[in-house]
Length: 411
Length: 84
Image 1 (cartoon, chains in turn yellow, brown):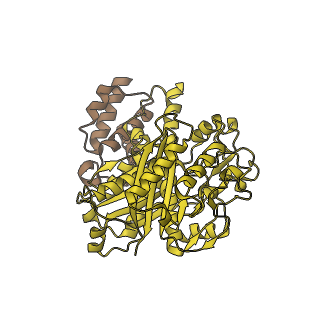
Image 2 (cartoon, one colour):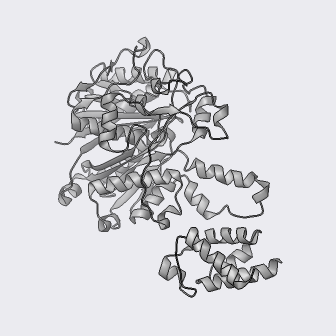
Image 3 (tube, helix red, strand yellow):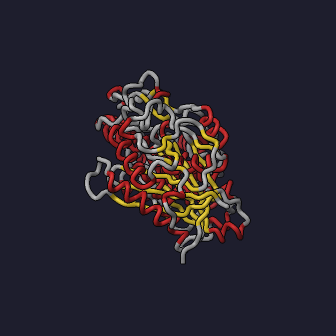
């Protein structure tokens, strides 16, 4: 049995806005969400990259203590977007608790803020006599904290999977949710990912010489996917959630359908854990199309992973060209907000939904002069008013994990 | 600490940390306020701070059956006597 899978709810917290109108406004005006890296009195002074994709606005949370007590910052993000997506989909309590709804949600490594506090207590001799590190800190910081705080808050009793594959965390979450529904294991899934403000991630990429450093005094000019002057990625924070349902389930409920997911692929490069691999990425793109049972010519828009690293962008451009040639528009949405890590796949999916709905394709920000080695594909250099019928959202992660999601406008 | 001081401190912890405003001294905290094992663990951390010393595993286990504010006060009183 293969069922159609549709999207009925979507919400995100991004460096370029929270609500749909804020995010699309930023896209239309070319507003960047990248800001100066905040001082953290630990790592920031040792990091060469001084930029961060920052959620620079307040979010009004309204969570009772019985929920807050097991949540670190990453779970606040996760539960907020889940709450908004569930409200949009109008899934009621009875459905959520029925067992037919599951959760696929993850983060890169739980809550680094809480983990940092735990280590501070470990190494602080003055407090070592008090055993205040306990189950609560673990619940706040563990790698599946986002998924299970969502299940707790909404009393969800179905399947739970918490992918933690760095940059493909949330694209995998959507893909696995899609497969659960497609093959009849669940009727609906809350899918997504979140990552909080975290200088540890910046330090890791900084040490690998993968972070942007040339634009520390002009953060809005970086990252620069596919641009000749690109100098690396910009780590960011954010969260996103989508509600997926079987078409029949959504139709029976009378839910508004935002779009349809028609394909998903996930593979591994089978080798190096860091370097991008053109064969692996090409194969992931091809497998996505095969899964969707469409030909490359049917894809109008590609949301590229495009982190703005020297090598990654070239490899991705080559792979896109191998499969699609130069027909679909290609945009690197990280140019607006940096690399929001575990949430990038779902945020880029949601922004693609917004563009699909509004009939626009936003350009890659800061793409002033295309690197000749990336020039073989159709870069979106300016804002286009053009319909997107089918879009591909592709993401790649450390560890050689590649994903491709194929989304079709619901008609 | 005298009993009144302990009670005042415990009620302050409940107000500030557990967000339960004015529990009755013999109210069943689990049944009436959804006070659960996570709250209990956090309360033990607060009691450690109050006493200025860590609790042993056995001392913590003794607290797991506590249901009321009065029982918490009894527990703190007995700990204080043992520790001092």
